[in-house]
Length: 209
Ligand code: URA
Image 1 (cartoon, rainbow, N blue to C red):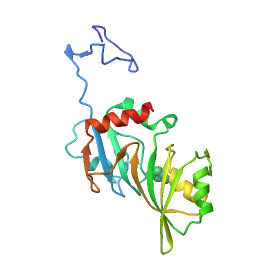
Image 2 (spheres, helix red, strand yellow; image 1 turned 120 degrees about the vertical axis):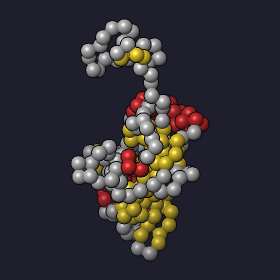
Image 3 (cartoon, rainbow, N blue to C red; image 1 turned 45 degrees about the vertical axis):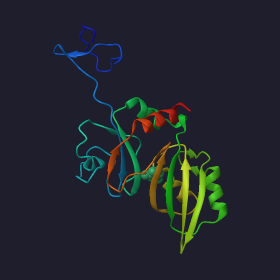
């Protein structure tokens, strides 16, 4: 770095100012990629599975750079998954202090009453602590099921499923439909696209606000 050999793997580099060479050849920063994927059920959000099950990376042929997933979706959850090599933005989006909203469509295993929806709104007790207030919209009741839309500003492990369990129900179907200003618009299930420059700028603003 800047003509000196760096031995420490956790040495900080400022890519704007520092000159980094390997075997005297300059290293350039890989092109930034921001991939929006409509994840189907049945795909793991890990890079490689020891059991050989399909992962979301199987759905990204033609993406040459390594992109890391921003947060996780369960195996049985479908919907919006962002993948990027912009680690700064990825960290900011997953930091609960930034309260970036995430919206899910839920099919509950039974009919829910207003009191249960209010519990979700005000916060329920989970084993890793109470949840923050959530925005909950009752979409419709259909037969034995209630469909609702829930927006949370945290991203704990299996959070929405556990919230439904905390009110005595179960999420039979879970789809993430929004992350900050991003939606699934323009995508069909299993497909991906690059974000537009405008979407990237908006996403960065989500974090700053
Ligand atoms: N909440 C869950 O319970 N599962 C997900 O995949 C995402 C949010």
